[in-house]
Amino acid sequence: MRAKLSYALTAAVLVFYFVLVGSRGVLLIEAGTVVTVTFGVAVLILPVIGLWFLWKNTQFVRRANQLAAELEAEGALPVDELKRTPSGRIDRDSADEVFARRKAETEASPEDWRTWFRLAVAYHDARDTPRARKAMQRAIALHDGKDTHPAGTA
Image 1 (cartoon, rainbow, N blue to C red):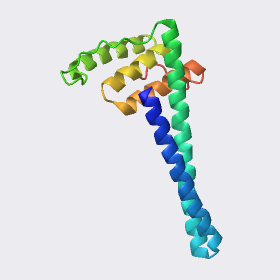
Image 2: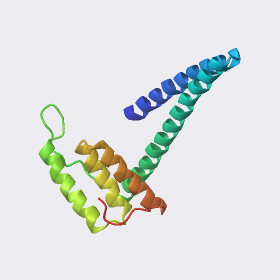
Image 3: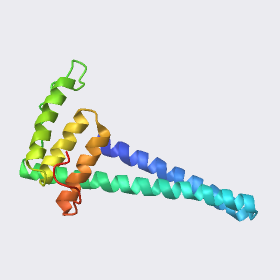
Image 4: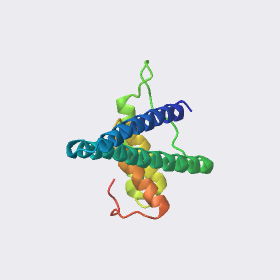
């Protein structure tokens, strides 16, 4: 719940910022000179791009949470079996061991979105965020029947 509140607060601050920047762009355009109109259009492009990224990220998070809820209903969510340091951080060797198992599961069933979801969690636990995101995107695509990747690209 804390992560959801943090995400919502960050998104709200970003939207406020985008509105503020967008209003400045409109003011520049209203000034009517070639230079201010050019800068105004350039300033308006930034919030549009930012809103698009925020929207795409929100969709991604929502879909990943839907998959997690579906796995939880099936009783198939990955269990937290990782060893932790006294400070609570995940032990690297433990994360690597779980990752190796998850990768083998995914290679054995490359068309199963569940294995890709669990691989994404393992990548995340191993602090490899870019690969975690790609694996989760693959899980979402497989779940939705939109996968266009060749089999076995874990």
